[in-house]
Length: 315
Ligand code: NAI
Image (tube, rainbow, N blue to C red):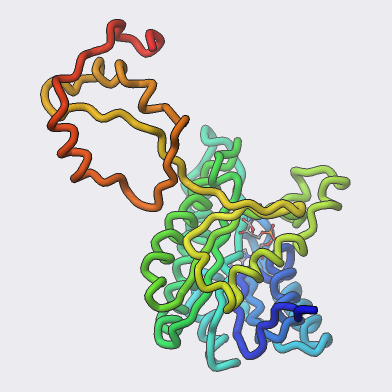
């Protein structure tokens, strides 16, 4: 039968690999022949403190199983040092899995600047710094695979997590742009919204549910996306966990087109409100609407009639 996907000779950097999903990635790629950089700062899930233990255990586990791994103890905010570890230890970097993360859950009403800033620093600045440092290597070798880690909280919103939601949806925009800039250099970038049992989720989900949400069930999709045999899938968002995996995408409604003159009033928009919201014949854009073409069409339209009832409910 077909052989398992292998990563022999490749260097895979996994951030936040001391536990949870990151550990599962690291162990998997170690088993599949990759040189693994096991990064973790080793603080609490709220981003406090620092320890070397967790990631050292992961490195030993990989090496004891016959794999190759080194530890890196820097914060993702110092991503250049993490990539430097990859280059110094293995001479190259092929795959970057931006996985490190923390939580600072608190209602928006009670949110402090520190809660906001720390989340942005670890998730947004962290993913930026690691990817920025790997990028020149990827470009030079015309090969790179990046996974960024979003969250359902970022895609859909989540009570008490507005800092985390903002940082997680940032991963989507980041990925979509990197996918565009990287394509020419065979740098493919995708973003996942995982769900898995970890110390991050153990306080918010019951034990019997957690039992069935193994990080190991997120790993195979990531492996498929970062394998050299994937030479097309880029800029995509995937939900993955509990054995479920599905791509997500943007959907554009039919939309309204209004003549661009003084008749383009709030009342004229209310008149067309159903079209603005009409998803019966959607399109799935990967870029902005063609405004030049639309503008030309809009100018050919007759003046816009206002709605009969000028209140939102009237629609
Ligand atoms: P986890 O807490 O077990 O793993 C995160 C790791 O990142 C920890 O080992 C932590 O020490 C490390 N870390 C934190 N700040 C760091 C920094 N500045 N530099 C380097 N390492 C740092 O949690 P889990 O669940 O494995 O999370 C992994 C990723 O998946 C995170 O980005 C998280 O936001 C995301 N995620 C997880 C979900 C889940 O259901 N477990 C749901 C949605 C997203």
